[in-house]
Image (cartoon, rainbow, N blue to C red):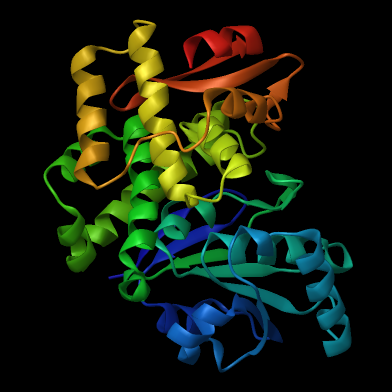
Length: 337
């Protein structure tokens, strides 16, 4: 049974079968797919009916060079303002496709089919589209909502264990910041259970999307409340800028672990809740060791795009299901991290 969730501005997330939903959701006009070679290999039947452009894989594909290549291909293909851009892939594909659609000819309609757990619960939802530059994550981007996002748990069956686990980091983040019941569900499940129980996975995705969509509806352009979605991400983005040892989800798990330790040391969270967070991160197989030196981490954090002068908004867990947005000076940050 398909679940439908409104995000904001008419954008909707659908949880159900991708092929059937696309038949209903795609407008009756030219569709050009943006995807990557891995998705073309694992889900060729989903891409084959449409003209398509394939990009590279990994964070290096989220670049200005990739954007220019796509723009040139769209021009060569004769794409105009009536063209609909469909991003099929994980968070990197949807970030790039959304940015391209939002800027090509000053903007064309677009939608997504997400093929990763991380994309389903976070990256493809909420209207953030962007690319990296100089090692800084998503430094160039726009807020622009897709017409729709399709999340089909059946597409996640081809994910390698490491990529599925990466998505679970964002699920854990969501549970900590806004759904204590989801946190308990995760405690009573396991990695293998979530991979093999489609009904349970659908429920987890549904809960994550509802949390995120409620936050985005209040603050689409991240002027205030939406910042809570960055729980664990300040540390994660600094790690990703400084090292290629971890993927995004793994870096988020490290960020969640260390910011919870910091909150505990500051007396902001009860020890029992902090220990439950530590235990859940360990339960799902994450290594929480910082892969870089502390000074390198702090230097990278100073370049975070969410800084305000010599201060930075940091989201800290206060309890399971509740977080706070705190503004710390960089000097204070060096003390608490």
